[in-house]
Image 1 (tube, rainbow, N blue to C red):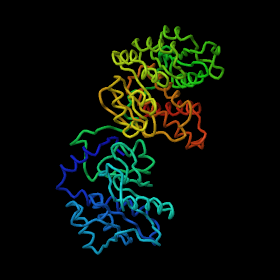
Image 2: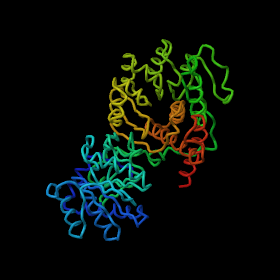
Image 3: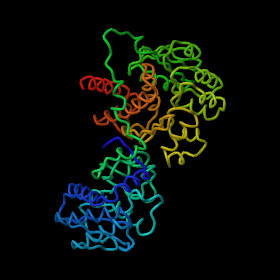
Length: 497
């Protein structure tokens, strides 16, 4: 999959520019080819659901070609052929002229080799209703009953292709063939749960030659130029000093996790400034970490600072955060630091006026506090929420969650595709803070550091799951060593390449 992501409006422009080309026939051919791979039980028919728009036209083209390959497609279509858009109407005629027939409801008493969802694609911006809602529910139920694949064309019906919000009901596809380019909604929020395996059929187009991509996937190539091997003639001072401000009473572990992650991702020195009035003398599992009182941390010779892991909401925390924001160090804010910014107007003013934009890494609930809205509002359009935070607070943002969204101050955005449900556990955000601040401390610019940290965090968790560690029961601490190993492999591969 290319890394370019396009919203529906941009795709409509591309389609309009190629209205004289047989895009629907190309889409149908690509769909039929993948359907033929998936429908391995040829003795069973293929259920094809055709909608009232151009997505239905794609389905008719696929069904016609499947008939030519001696499959038995059962096409369910309840619309009026005369009301179809011109291209879809032409596809319907080609299908019927070749001997194809339709029925107006899903037949009972049959088992299916494959179900093809060609109902709505990217054209639906509201919950499906009526018989279409019933067909979506039936398709999900029949796919589970018959243990057969469910292939969505362009976008699972009921899923918002721009935001990833799933309406009710929504197709739960095992495979999604999307056309021209990938859509952001397939990759964030509900999208990954609803799309299954995603492939792109470009329909012989080169969209970036005509319309700039709206956003991009995070790829290693985007930060590969910073994956440099270490010089032999170097020392700990060559790799920066990272500071972690946090660790209020009962939350020292959060600072320890962030510090351990920063150390193992290569920061030359890592200092922890702990707010607990009775802090431990050292981290017994990682004695290389240097523990300080918070004021002493802020006076240390740091090259980057992360505030928030276990910071708490005390008056001391507010005052320390104000001092940190007023400084010029590369700065990352997470967890309690975000909550304090959301509640303290003076911190908001200071943050927005920084010469060097900070990084913010909220989860959806923290993002909602920053935007003074509900968590559901954030999740309904994660890209818009991340961009609004970036603009309002003049910060680079990583809105964590399924398909983490990275938004830059200048309006650019990316979606990360690494990671798994095992990461839904305490301390994962602290580890991410440590990874990112380590890269900042080593001199990485903000966006490459944030992109690499987010991508690495998920890739390390994926590595552990692939090795049988999780996803259930995966812990944040386990991700740290996996991240170190993965990062070193990336550096080695970049050097070899």
